Image 1 (tube, rainbow, N blue to C red):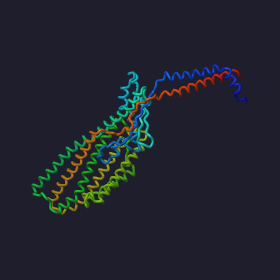
Image 2 (tube, rainbow, N blue to C red):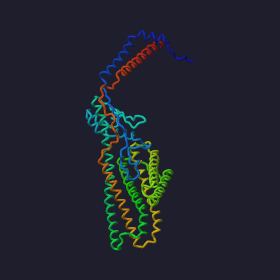
Image 3 (cartoon, rainbow, N blue to C red):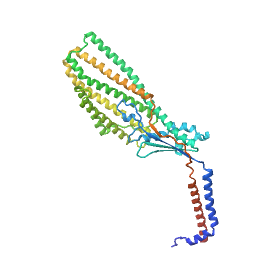
Image 4 (cartoon, one colour):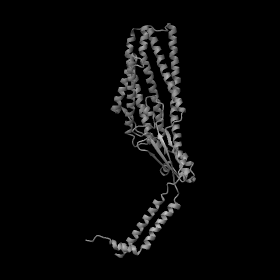
Length: 447
């Protein structure tokens, strides 16, 4: 059995001392080469940092889908800071910046936003906060500062454009619906006026008047729910268009399979019916009415959160932006279904209540029906006008989705190359070569 190879350290050291001039020369040479490279060949790099705070943009919520409308806002799929970090590295933000860099045109053409962000940007989320730290590298202090500032400016411009486009979409939808609702209201008012003149009924009899007041709660609820349904449909169309622009082939989420979602959905419908019943009995500021509205709002928030979590579980591997848009689309679908089911429940309750009106005269019934049509159409029209004005105001506002805490600084000293570290590495490499050289001499002696 062969003996295990072993090294006589005393002999090894003797060989090293005998050839110390060569060994020292190797170490010194490698160290000097590394030092020369670090001090005279490698370009200096500078870093400029901008500190910003992420915040949720104020977006118009017309359909009860507040979580969906907060497209860059928080769900499990992606926090606002995660989405913002991805957007800051996007082509829309970085391509214009790259074109303004002082580098050869050939290099610009071959430089992608992805490669540029890897080599020149370091975007970090300060743990446990909503703060983002954007650190940019440049070959001069001015370039580093410019890159850091341009990333933030480009992101703000992108978010402003995206948010204004979204509000513009809603404003256009509302504008069209307002025209239609106004025509419908005018037609209903004219029918009531014609009937009143023909039948000489301008003030209904006491019993008819009482029934009309009872039906007011149904009419108001129907008008509100109808606007929610149509607005949710508009939001659905908007998010579907955005997904098409993203060229995203995404899975569909059937929330009907989620028992928790269905349970909350049924609770919302029951609470909506309960609220209508309370509004028939009490004024709007009655504690029971206020409490019911608060419970309805809480149920809607729970529904939004549950749908968000459900979608998030299936989009963890997706692009954060696409995940947020898909979440908005699914929330819009869910709220369409909830609004439609609530409308059906309210109408069923309304039909049951209308049985008490059978004792009224035909003219009184006709007057009540025409008067209610006017009330419903007027409620829809006024709600649409109010939402349209809100959308137009938000459309003209700059969307400040982040607040600049510390603007990009002008670095005073270069951060690279790390001269001492590179020199030390060179010396270490020289030491390893010297060791290898001594080991070769040792082996030759024992051949």
